[in-house]
Amino acid sequence: MFPEYRDLITQLKTTDHHFTRLFDQHNALDQQIQNMESRIEAATPEEIETLKKEKLQLKDQLYTLLMQADAPA
Image 1 (cartoon, rainbow, N blue to C red):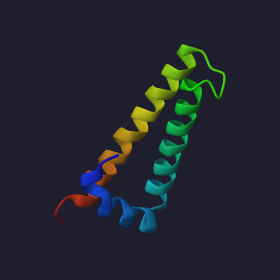
Image 2 (tube, one colour):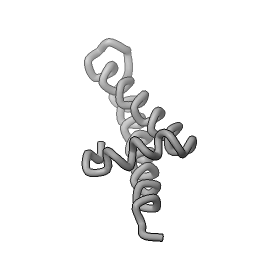
Image 3 (tube, rainbow, N blue to C red):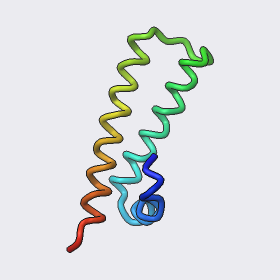
Image 4 (cartoon, rainbow, N blue to C red):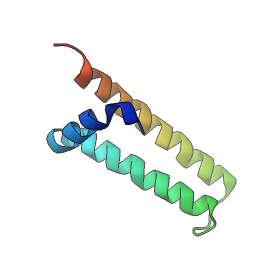
C-alpha cells in the first residue's frame, strides 16, 4: 500500500499513534478478507464485501493523513 510513501509511512508509524492504529486495522482487515476468500474463515460474499468497503475507508483515511504529513508547512 502506497509504496511511494514507504519512508513517510515508517516515520508516521513511529510518531503518530492514530496513523499506526488505522494502519494496523487496515492490515488486519486485509488478512481477514484474504482468509475469508481462501475459505480459511467462513463468510458470506456480503460479509466480505462489507469488510472490503471498511478496508477502503481506512485506506482513504490513511492517504489523507499521508497527504497532510507530506504537505509543505
